[in-house]
Image (cartoon, rainbow, N blue to C red; front, side, top):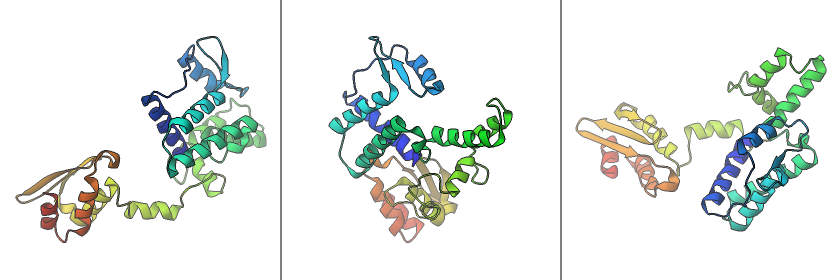
Length: 241
């Protein structure tokens, strides 16, 4: 959930900026503000604007949230993001510990604080520094985030079964579907494979298949249909041709 919320809200803000509807705010020193926010132990998260006013980072996000609601698109995904975004801002303003099941820095702070208090450690202790790093370990066995997840302390949108199923059965509206089916059915005919293209070749037959992002290529459905329905490599080449 944390990645969906982080990436989703970032996309909404970028779209707002591109459309020219972003709130008119100018930070006095953007780089310095970023440093101060990340190190603010008072949790007030105040930043200075170019006109001398001070505003909290939460209120800045509320302004962007309101702007997206006014100028953004309305669909199921956007509505979910706006609801969760507002919920996180409300919880951060009321009691930030409420966000430990969906915001990384709060989850990690909770983990470190609990361990520090139980072991009577100083915050400078190397043991805590190693735990800080292990939280982000991508290993399912060693990453502390995954341990919190297994204990039910992190919100999830999909189960492990859903993830395993998607690995072998990617949605048919994605380029992952074509890549996956190509590897499963015509692995010997793959000359090269990249994120956004596959080169298929056998004898005199050769074709480079462009795999643009679904949002940028209306033809993706056609090539996915071709690889799903083709009975042989030769038929696939004819359909792609």
